[in-house]
Length: 318
Length: 157
Image (cartoon, rainbow over all chains, first blue to last red):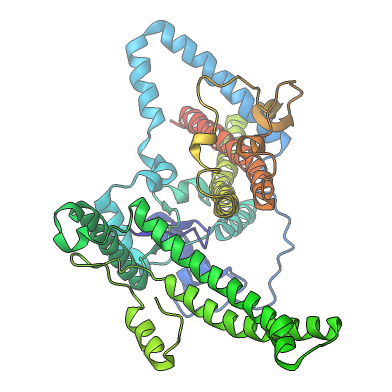
């Protein structure tokens, strides 16, 4: 259930081959090295100088001449292949296969299809020094420069043969234990609910508490409707008291004054009633306990409500 | 003999360049895959939000067109362009008549998040195409390396 996080660092890790290490160690390198190469040659404690000259002309990209050369070589190879295949076909096939997967090509494809034991091996090498792409760029330029002076400097691709290129791995995100606990709880609740539903027909106590039948629902609705009806009636009665009752008590009154009295009375009673109505409607919002397995339905906030009612001892109770 | 040596050198130099290019391409591909991932994640979050707003039945797989729904043409298509002997793809708007606005599958008045999700998903097509282009270059590069190595071994037995 662990998730894979997205990649944070997209740098390739190139674990240098033995050849490359030897080459680097035998070179007399200057001081302005990239960090990783410096670490490789001068020990772990190497620190690069701050004034980096990054303005080097990067001639690492193929130019048109190169592409032309590649194309001509391709043509040549193809012509030769055709000639070969005319002569002996089976041999050609074997030949091609060996070209497709030459042993030194593992630097290209290995990282994507490493088997588990190899992976473990790589994992152990966590502390081994590695190069990044920019180091390779630097190395290319450096080797080219050196080769213009000395002829016997090996080529970069020969040095890189046998190197191990590793793709960065996704970080594995462990599930949050809080979330896990919550999932377990929710699953338990769900199961309890299902169980309750299943055993409803055989539980004597609960047969008398059919929460999901229509009559039960209607009863609930009626209770609320009655509460609202009571509210309206008491307001009306209050109004009537102010409008007629006071007149009957003290004698003739002006119509406007009577109206005002009625509205005032109704308002006061409405305020008080609203308080009780809100309280009553709030009580109805009981959530049944989800983890309960048998017995009559109990509610999550039952105890809480009972306390409240007994404290206020309010008049609007069924 | 001299020209052979010269050629050998140039081949080796090109091989170096190809190897460096390969490494760069690999890194580039990872970056573009990361872009796709974040793009689709964003879009999915917006889609989830709109699902939350509209309810899980109004935004679900049951609203998607099935096999026997009327056919429609894609609103975005890819065009292949030849570049340095490679086919590179490019996103293009289709001019077909019977395109469908995918938002209409989920209703006419859809939340803002749905519009956002649509735009993000549309944008992610660009990233996918970019990734495919890099992949094509990678494969081509590997082929080139193989051929050049073969050639090199012929030059210098």
